[in-house]
Structures are given as C-alpha cells and as structure tokens.
Length: 179
Image (cartoon, rainbow, N blue to C red; front, side):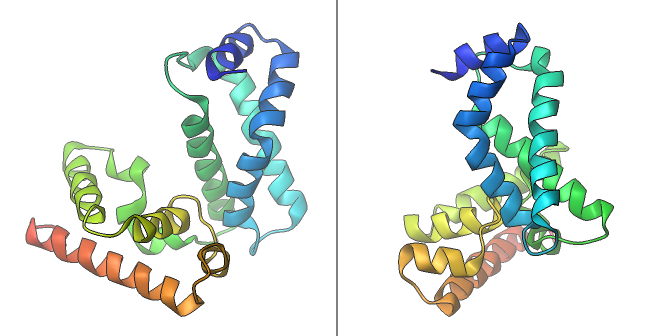
C-alpha cells in the first residue's frame, strides 16, 4: 500500500483505510509522541494523544494532498500535538529551549525561512552521523541515552555533538545578523 491509496481512502472516509494507516504508521507516531511526552506524562496520555492524531487525520482528510507523502505530515501532526499537550500542562520540551530547530515556527515568515536555511546549511558542515544525532534529538525528540545506544556512543559524546552543532548554528546566525 502506498500513500496515494491511503490518502484517497481517507478522503472517501473508508474506515478500513484508516485502520491500515494506523497499522502502518501507528508505531511510528507512538514513538514520536512517547519521546516527547514519555517522561512527563502517563502512558495513557501518550495513547490518548496518538488517538487524537489519527482522529484529526480522519477529520481533516479532505485537506490531504495525494502528491505529498503521508509520513512527514504525520510527523508534523505528532510533534505539534505532543507539544500542545505539554503546553496544556505547562511543561516544556527540548526545542523550547532553542527555537532554531522548530521548522513550523521558523517558516512563519521570510526572516525565519532565512534562519532555517542558515541552520540547514550549517548542518551540512557536519558528518552524516552528527546530522542524524541532531535530527533524532530535535526533530524526533529521541532521548540522548537512546541515541547513544543506537550508535554505540557515550551519552556525553551525544551531548557534546549536540552542543557543537548548536554553537556553530548560533555562530552562523549571528554572522547573518540574528541574535
């Protein structure tokens, strides 16, 4: 099954297709939400948020574009839903400490798009492993210890890698007049 099939089925409100989407992407969405909410909330809250994500996918299926992949859309919905859940409980996430990784906020206007381009260009200066670590932590909210285990690194090595990338991104942004 491909995303075009899923999107067409969701637009036609076929419950069978929604179940197939959940089977295909449910674990992935759960992992993202759990990485964001896991330490701050109960498992029931994580499951409720995941359910809400698929409910909203169902409700707003008419807005889906069959020419765009479903997975990045679900990632975006999952990240936003989990962050909104944290905000509703007045909790914070790692990205709220550093806005340069939040693409939905950076893309709000032309100036922020330029900042995103600077960060993306800066990331190209790092090794593929360093970029992967950065994306796993700031985009997928994976825990430092989990990233370290995945790549057989120490926690401090992962923290240092993130520190170096943040420092370089901040430096590049300042060079372009951003503070």
